[in-house]
Image (cartoon, rainbow, N blue to C red; front, top):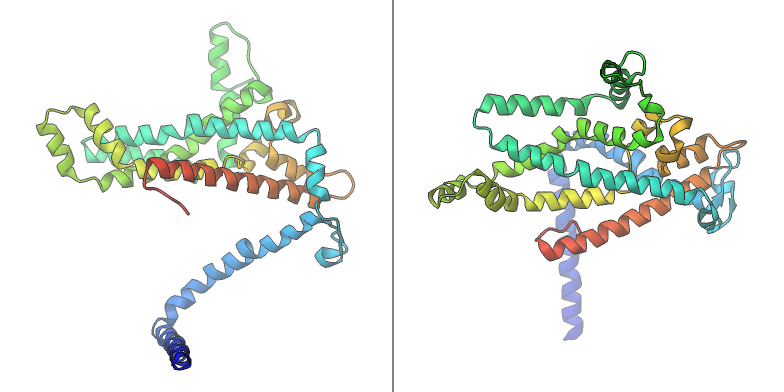
Length: 324
């Protein structure tokens, strides 16, 4: 009797698989154009996202471009042990964390505040115009943004130094001062990203039931009451998700922007993990040390994953929001 049941279950399972394959074939024939449109994106994902993951094996080798991945000598965890004995690693890690914390503490709340005030504007054309203008810098390349910054802060002709001189002060070469690197980086980050990030919160606000605001007005709530008691709680899920993503990027800074703002006089505050990896992989004396650069990058990613997991667990206690 047990054998009959087992055989029947196996037969049913086999029939389900056959039906699944047949359904897929029918669906493919009916929607083959859609699958064809999916192909370029799928190839891009495989070639540039999934494929390079296999290249991380060089972190466990003494990689040589002449010998290749399969011909290079296997060294196990030697490259990772080297990280803990590298005297320069604590410095670049500290610089990276400081920039990331400044980004979270200073940059992260600004799109939320901006979207809250923008939501209070009653004239639609003003609201859409301001939103469009705030969104435009996101499409400007880092090279152009840094060039604009250089022009504004130029010691000879920049508008900032012209104002300083007109007030009796001396011109300041901001781009060559280590103490000014972080504030300037944060200012550029705000300028370029706050409009784009605000769209997420504005979209969340569009889904709030207007009846909630009407009921609050009947109860005598003013605008501030509605912001703190209706709008913010309603978009809290979006805020927490964005916070988790920001923490996940705590070891990731805008490399293009830093390299463009980079010069030997600001290494003290500007040198971060990514620039260090870049130098190890592409600017090392003699042969580039691809293996060590990859090991540093893997360790950075593992730590970032652990931080995301912790924040996700914490967020789960305060809101019904989980990424995984």
